[in-house]
Image 1 (cartoon, rainbow, N blue to C red):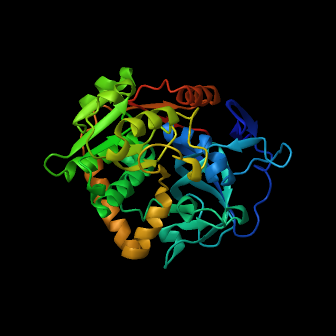
Image 2: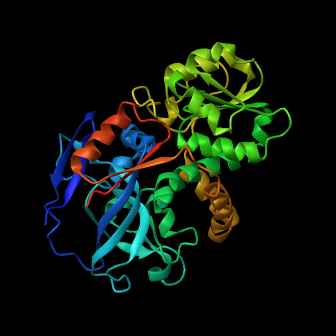
Length: 377
């Protein structure tokens, strides 16, 4: 049976294709499982994975088979969602189990389960221990059995796939800022304010905002009305309005990854800017090339790459895995309960539809209220 995989040219993100996985009919090795990828979320976050694929290692999770010189020409786009076990040579993982995690945009995937947590991995989930993933961050290698996931609900699968991985970044960003007392700033400025990660962070910042604290969203003119209606920003400005910002102490959380916007903000605020970090690359044509060049030679503080998995590792070491999960779960459930009339979920089932969605996201033409759930199987 054909098992199409979606691939992107690593040296030109505008080129994409579907290929049949020739290994789909091959026997599994001992300990492996084969999963049918049922539903995945496609958002601007996936464009960040592609744009930073070389710098941050995202292409390494699901390497493509062919190559170009010493680098593979094509890469598999990773996404968050749900998949079902359809074949197993792993003694304690049965066919029919459903897992949440990090999958390629593909009809099927083969994983090598290893223990994730103390206890029965059939109940708690597993880490993929495939050789090519051992040097990669374990956050992306962990798969949760939906039966044992306290935050899982079948009715909420679309929202979980769309918002949960993004809200995790929002959660650790909020915790990071709180841990540093907001860097003694009176304003938080978020670029790509219409993004789901920025919305989640702004909602968390709003909950603990001190008197006089301002949350400012930066966005394109066409998304300004949408961002204002979210009700989590004290002010929403277009990128061209940066010179109108009061020169007050501020932190800059850059979801856009646009070097021109960052330069304008650093230049305008200069010594009033107390902290600056790059989180995403929704403006993928001008992302920070590496962590070391995220913000060199700009006025104000050096802009750094904020790597959420590193923050998660630190807090897990300090709080313990259970402590981290409890804190995050409480915050997630509160966020999930928020009224989200702005979220308009669309489903796509064909390869042509999925390709069109990818190109739309790549070009930044997706309406901010829209969330795409794709079914590549």
